[in-house]
Image 1 (cartoon, helix red, strand yellow):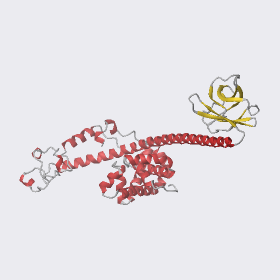
Image 2: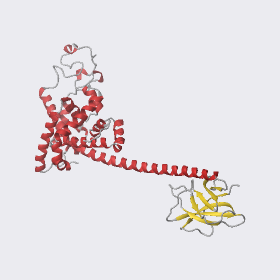
Image 3: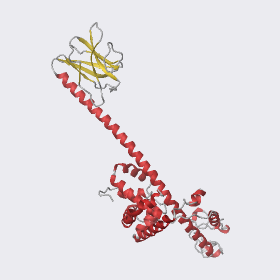
Image 4: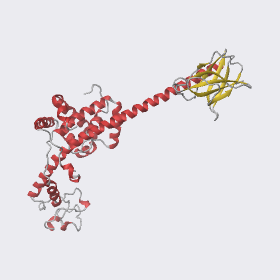
Length: 101
Length: 310
């Protein structure tokens, strides 16, 4: 929870240059689109785990579905995302992500 | 995507998501170095997930935001999940006696106090404006959190790659060492088998050579004017620094050097040593470890010795 973190956690790392920012906006849009195309239950499982930081077991409890179902939803969701984003990753994935890794 | 699949591919994705329980996490971490399929799946998933972090705009919040957020949080009545946990919200009239959960109408009697389940009721202290403020604050927190998560995810990925590399290296070293020990044991067993075969032949003399502590570590078998050394448990020597020497000891005479030999971890004999010498006169044999590559006139460090069996 951010409220409990150090003050320095609050300042985002130095932003990328203008070109990269524009590129980032394009990427962000495409990723959001890709997320939007996922079946609801897969998007829910992935966002709870990735953005929410919940474990698969917690996601199972929150959503009221068996743990095995959560695991396969996350697996299938990631595969679908990868398929949809394949052109993006192939084109300039390494350039764009280079600074963050 | 990987061509072959592993039953644990789903776990690998969960691992890349950092969403496994600690025991599962450990199991997958141990599994990854030995499963190319799962490594590929986890790597691909990590790549995709990096985009989820990159998809969110990174904001630089004004320094005063934290103070304002914390102030808003402090002023906001907290919504509790269970009625039995007490009332932490600043609602003095409700703190003295916890209400039983099955008294839904009591709130009407008590005027503007909140209903017993502690949820914001019709007469809640939450103003509409307050709720909107909190909602806006939470939205900002969510955006910030997501940005931080994206960076943190990338950092964790790097740490994880380093951990995998280290685990893999340690495991490879262990496997190599185990293979070496196993080969040495096989060589030793083979050596003993050859030795027992030799003993069965007619006209063969042998001597078992023991260290000072009494443990037999080698045998000498002689027949037809030649002798073989079986270095069953003799430690390997450094071929470039020293050599083993076989000595024959006749009654009432000084030990005579019969020949040199080397012992390696993988070769447990038999070694032909000094087979040109006439060995029939010796009552005992000994082996010593000598510096250099040639036998001295007298042994310096006797490793093991033993009499010829009658």
